[in-house]
Length: 226
Image (cartoon, rainbow, N blue to C red; front, side, top):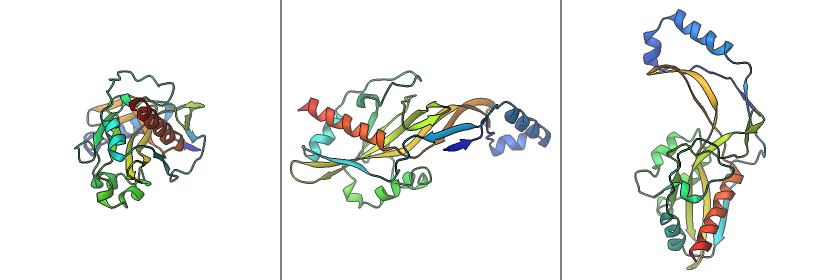
């Protein structure tokens, strides 16, 4: 279980240089007194974030990969939490090499937020060229293993799908979460545009349940295609 302070102040250097010490102290006091309690976040399953989720599917790499790339995309325009894991068509998709696919440099910069990605980076580059990136650019939240204030936290994450040919007709598919995060309400923040009650986003560990759910969605897509 993790306790995190409610309403933490976040200020840019530019903002700090433009206000005096007394104003900073007053804003800090306002932030602390505006919170009746600390925010409590916990993972209800406590699964090992480094545990890998994969399966061998009865299709060659090209078939599995193209099935995901060809899926129609459905726009999503609501910040209401979905009842369960999203359908595949709610994600955007990018093949390896696309500008949207995180390069090795970007992944390394974010290793403190997704340390399990170090295992992925350890794979030879030529073994990752067929991989696919599923990502979110709009508000898309679903319940996960993370709990906030006695209820499911608004969870969201991007995913890398890694493919490995195990024969001419079978493919090992591994699902990896990239930058999983939760939205735990709002907090008082000072940014470049001044003070605001802004979205309070927290980085969390990857969860086995979400990766397993995505793997099942991939299985379903292949069955529908065949």
